[in-house]
Length: 328
Picture 1 (cartoon, one colour):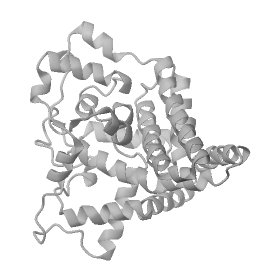
Picture 2 (cartoon, one colour; picture 1 turned 180 degrees about the vertical axis):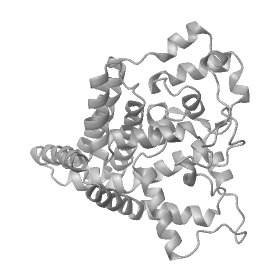
Picture 3 (cartoon, rainbow, N blue to C red; picture 1 turned 60 degrees about the horizontal axis):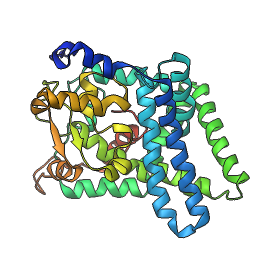
């Protein structure tokens, strides 16, 4: 296994500062999950009130579906809440299963990413190593996302894989949580909200913003062997964060430096690191647009294209795994 330099917590923050950022909270973790579902319910109610607002609701819900995957990610690290059983329950039943992910399987996968970030044995390396790409290639990928091709391939792969591995609990959990969502829509008198504003965002907008987030986090980073620069923190305004980077996932270098810090304490950690000068040596960018421009800067015809039909199909499958939350 590849080994790269790791940073000690004491090299980053003083003991008193570490105490400020390290503690998980049952209240804050639960409120984050409830907030995600409140936004989803509110966005559905918005469209039930005025159907022409469906595109706005789709974007809002897709962002919160990503938010659920991000909160499951915190639960995978055991830091969504302080109480263990609550962490597992929220991460599995209210975050993971509804969007088609399984907490324990994701935890086993994801911790390998933290052990070998951007190294040859990093299971997420496939998501970043091909960048920069051409703008045409990026455009094709986004079209696949928006037309549901990425989401469909991922869901099909996930379901067939679970059947082959006899992961009946995962399939039952996904079916049960989605049945609850469908039942709630039917009970409200708007059954069509489930396909239009749960399945459609999951298969389309969720895929787009997951792709953008994956690019921002690890693509074209300055140094794969430097823990301060083999991930990227992207600073942006509250509106963009609400749509593209819910629940402070944009503080990605901070997360990799101290992965036991809960997501709701990452902004404080960033401020503390900025105060002691550490952010000066970190890969920190302002705005997603600049990162996307750099990640799509390969000139046309310079090589590194997606290849033939078989290669494109494999790309869709890999991208689909990322869309399930199998990254961060």
